[in-house]
Image (cartoon, rainbow, N blue to C red):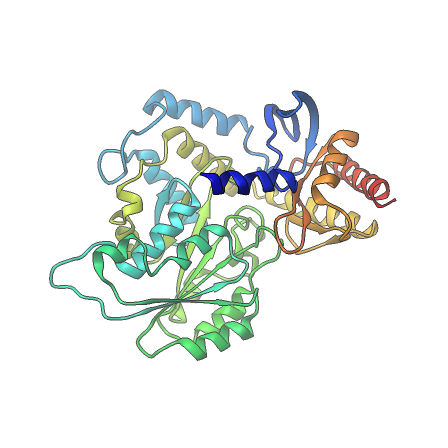
Length: 421
């Protein structure tokens, strides 16, 4: 514990520990926030919520969650493969499958568990089965800027729980440069062996850079490796990109079936904490066998199922998105407006989506910058100071008005002038 104490004392001293605010009330994009270090309260306009379509406070979504509590209670009190599966789970799986155009879906409590289960199941087939032995190695290629849930799952794919029990063949992990299809092709050519099971995994929209994976070009590369698998993490793509918010396939005018027709197996991970006003995640595939395999994974067997109110909120949210594509169009219009206003005022915004990272001048501390905006202008953005290029991370949503986005710009300009002098 001495090492931990010394480490954390240095973190505090260097100003690296995150500010932990407590929210007391939310209405649209206005939040009542307490700073626990001072006890002070602020009424803030937020640009750091992931409620991208504004459905968290939708009356229909809240009613669905409340009705689910009355019918099922607050917890299912078991894992789904024992006594914890309810009809709402089946409905949500069907709704996601229809939305993502993949017929089979499995639910998880969160994205970290979904990705963990996928890697365990795909690489190690979950449990030892008499009279069956897998002799084929697995090669996984992963974008260097993939989300932590992917990184955590793949970097340990050779020693996860499935490996302990199944004694399956080696898993080899190779990163490729961010969104660099030429590097992906080079790595495949260099490392793929004739009998390998090949998986490429990527964020669809990158959560810290706001850019989009080059899916069509990735498919072209993988077409030379029949039977390969491509996994898209659509946490920040669902509800955000594509004409109807369907995600990366919708964005590029493609369907998963077209990918399958080329001999490549598409898998999508959907999460509910952004567009679907809830929590949880799902893996969708054409393969019923893969989805059934996930039922056998330690992640599914040893974990409680998605609670009824959470499931109901996600289900109603996805129905709202599919019935009201104008929500997506408003979000995309707001994204274009804010990005244009940032550019007009000399701010360098990365990417192209509603995730809007803004790089500051090297002498400006993102935490200090964000605190100034909060205290002087009542605007709340997320400072990101612990990665290679510190930045502000702004998230646009469908509820933001142009006046509110102009207020954000005014606060940023003022903060830059005040802190640069």
